[in-house]
Amino acid sequence: MSQHTIRPLNPVPEEFAGDSFKHNLKRAFHATRPKFFPASVLPVVVGSAWGAYATGQFSVYVFVLALLATVCVHAASNVLNDVGDDEIGTDPRNDLRIYPYTGGSRFIQTGILSQRRMARLGITLIVIATLAGLALFVERGPMVITFGIIGIALGVFYSLGPVRLSSLGLGETAVAIAFGVLPVSGAAWLQGAAIDTTLILYSIPVSAWVAAILLINEVPDIEADGNCGKNTLPVRLGLNATANLYFSIHVVAAASVVLLTAQGHLPLLAPLVPLGLLALGWKAAAGIRGGIEQREIMAKSIEATLGVHTIGCIWLALCALFALWF
Image (tube, rainbow, N blue to C red; front, side, top):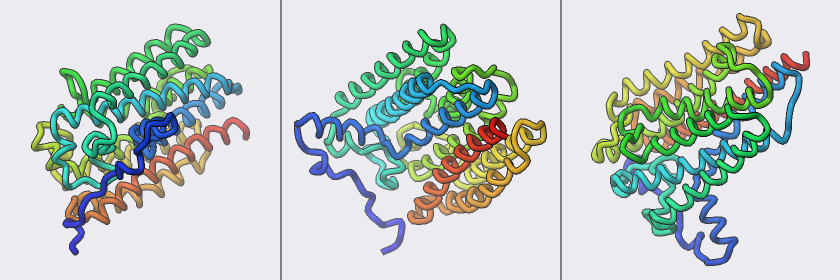
């Protein structure tokens, strides 16, 4: 059987059946697509590490609240994105998806949760994030509200409302801000660091790596998205231009670390890992050029991109802590 004829997988409804609190919690948790939570957890870790480096202090309480708020906004965005994609019809007709990475959670399409219950879950998660934000507001002041409003707005308008940033080809930029610049600079500021050009530059690699995740995840969905008017960058650009853009994003990430090191803000060996990760980025870019016709290669390219984000973020955090301790 050729790779492009392999039947896409779905979550199995029987695995999520049951009316107990435990079963409801299991459905809610998996509907949020937790495999992607590192994309929101790691930026907070990276930013908090910079805050500790800049101030020599670290508040565990503030860190936990920031983590809770950011992850809940991320989870709400994933859930509401499923609602929006079901409404416009891209997820129901997406037969080329690579589950669980693309095509949504499939919870609505398989009947595990209704569109209404998914929307309710998304709103509940936003409420939890707001409560965590209010606790941070008490600790750190009004600036917290600004970070929160921007984060929630980007998460909601990515796929819902009259704007639908993802349909305008602005989804990648929105995600880069919402899961890069915003949580990194916000987490650092919460630990007492100043928001300046150096901190913004420090957040750029995280923004780039998370944008690369979204970009490559959109490739298998090109046909379904295009047919429903969800004009993501891969829909607009095609495979070759998307592959070139994807690799360019990785180059930007590595270049930012090189520049920070040259300015004396990171250890001399800091560029070593980001430059090494370019090899993975190059290989994954080749997978994009093959498109969904090469399903197994495409899946490995997506996994490699997730790996680049994880390794890169952990390395950045360690570099900041090394600069603090040594």
